[in-house]
Length: 294
Length: 302
Image (cartoon, rainbow over all chains, first blue to last red; front, side, top):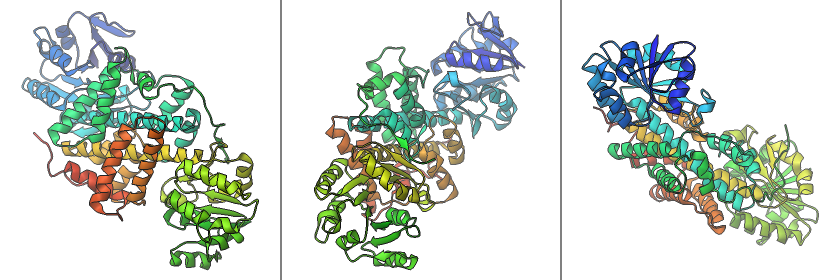
């Protein structure tokens, strides 16, 4: 199968790497990567490919790539398929799909949630929306990118599901930061909290990944903090549109926005620990959790 | 060993049941029907806390609040009247650590040691003997009572010499649990309003960094029409208040915890003092005008 990947994002690079051994992968511009073929224009990219994967930074970039004067639409013909893996607004995705449908082109939304692309496919899933027959036909391709693919229904529902996932993941992390700051200031070491909480009902993906990384150093996220804040903005907008209160998730959005304003543009979620857990790593006052039995 | 247990409520009762066949157990609770159940299993019923203390070398407590622990220890006919020097009190209450440290100092004056050893886990885990016991206090005392704790569950975690560390850890754990719980429910409610299925969301959540104790337990239970918690909402509010007060006492901002407290308080005020944590599922549904299991009535479709 001839695949085109559009985008200079880390996600686009990860997708290209996962597909290069099983498909013929074409890319555009100066984004040549091992096992890929560079094509001169977006229109040309659309002509050579059966399936075009969009892995861009934002919905605005998707619009530009699809519909600009020399965009993909110039080269896309009826029967081809676009997979939009760019995180975005479900409404915008539906509008794009409707536009392409008029020209006989299918679009499915299949955004990926993965906080640490270096670790792909661990702790990651693709949330898929669009016509079921198209999604079923493309499932093997999507599973090559990430083995866990969950189909949600009509176009846009993959985007909506990704916003659900992103919002809960951010809440897990900030709840963990806030509660462990309380524990730390009350005399518990981060090591001890990591040892105990992962065996108790406070356990989450954040206690499993973030607490050990706080104690020992190491990365748990490589996507930019700005992209996470944008994702939470879209989740908040969707909640507003649907009439869902989203009280905790909106607060977490606000906290991350405030944190981002004091950090460098290159900051990731990991860097927010400095804001929410200042001075961490000073004294560890307990003498180490012992697991008494086992 | 002569063991006493005071507080045979939902959690304390489940914990004490593991001791009845293995020790000479004396029990005390205001609920005489539960005491009678324990007598039928071979335990002795005490007349008062002081009486229970005289019949025990180790006394375990699992009470609603630190105030209850204070009155059982130091009230009229309290434990302190009957405890012999060298005996040990194990407080399994989700109490306030600084108050527990105060109790430990008072008991030390009469030669009695105190450990805190609150537990974490669903009721089913306590019944199955798999609950996590989070203990702290003098190491020598901990080693003395470890066999008794291991009779309750093999998952015993020791958090250091300082009395109250176990309860601080429990407060951190409770805050993480209920914070992630309400966040998960409110965001999933939004997904339901969009028209996403609960099952598909649960599957995706559990394969990503959105995973937490609630997504792995309560969301499945809701889909299957099962109950997954058995915990009074008033006690949940107390636990969150305690966690917030521990944070604010050390100058730690607790905005998410305070918001969670507000949501739980709305639930408690709306449902009444006998409400259960499980009923917060319905509170979150009605706040969002969404249903977790049925087709959403206000589905947003185009």
